[in-house]
Length: 374
Image 1: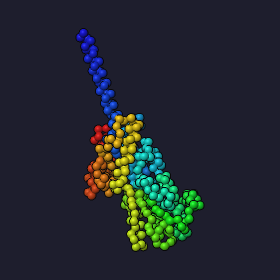
Image 2: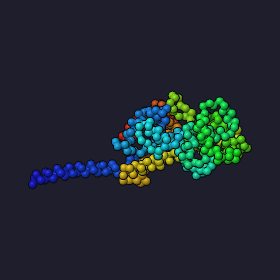
Image 3: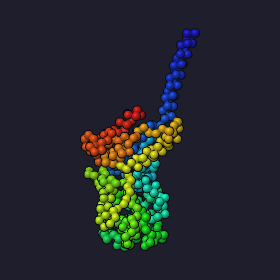
Image 4: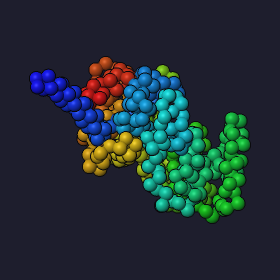
C-alpha cells in the first residue's frame, strides 16, 4: 500500500510537470507580442547599401528557429523610388531574412490613398529610381516620369545638350506607352508627385515651375496651380559619404523659393513622410496587419483588434525626423536613437531627446527584447 502511494505521487508530480509545461506553451502561443518595432533604414540598418550596426543578426532575433516571424516589425523610411515589392526583395537579400512587401512603408506609400482623385488624370512623377512604375503599381493610369514628360517639349530644358548621361532607351520605352493617347497641347497635368530624391535639380525645378505656374500646361498662360505632393520633407540624410547629404526637403526649399520669386501666389504643397503624425498612425495600422498575419500563421488565440500594442519602438538615427515624429505621435510610441547615422553625439539630442539612446541597432534590439522579456 505504501509503495503504491509513493508510485502514484511520483506519477502525479510528473503529470503535473507536464501539464505546467503544456500550459506554458499554450500561453506562449495564445498571445502575440504586445509590442511592435518600426525601423528606419538608412543610417540604422544600412549605409550606402551595406548593413551596419550588426543589423542582420539583430533582425534574425525577431524570428523563431523555424524562420517564422515572432515579433511584428516594419521598415518605416522616408526613402523610396521603387515599388514596395522590389524594396522588400532588395532588403531580404541585403539583410539575409525574408521580408514581406507589407513590412515596407516608404515615404511615397501614402500616395496610394490619392489614386481615386487622380486615377484618370495625367500626373508627373519625379525622382530617382522608378517613380512612374511606383505610381502605376499604386493604380494611377496616366503617369509619366518628369524625364519622359520633358521630352515632349522642345527646348523646355535649355541645358539638355550637355546631359550625355541620360538613359535614352528607358525614356523612349516610357514615352511610347502613352504617346498615342495624350495631347500635350490640351491635356493638363493635374498633379505632380515628388516620389523620391530628384536627380536633375535644375531641369526638374524648371519644368515643375512651368507645370505649376501655367495650370498644368507648360508654355501657356498663367493658370491655377495643379496639386503638388512630396513623399517626405527631409532636409538631409546619412548616406555613404561621411557628411550628410541634402534630401527632398532641400529640393522643396529650392523649388518653393524660385516658384515664389516668379509667381504672385505662393507655392501650395502637401508632404508626407516622418515626422508627420499621419505617417506614424498609418504605420501603427500596418503593424497591426503584420500582427494579424502572425496570428493566422501561428494560430494565436487573440485578435489584434482586441489587443492593441502597449508599445511601438521607433528605431531611428535622425532626431528631427524619427525621434520628433515618435514624440508627436505620442503613446504607444517609444523612441530609440542610434549613433550610426545622422546623430553621432554623446548623451541625448537636446531639442528632440529620445526615450533611449544606443550605439547600434543590435544594442537597440537587445534592450527591447530584455525589456519585453522575449
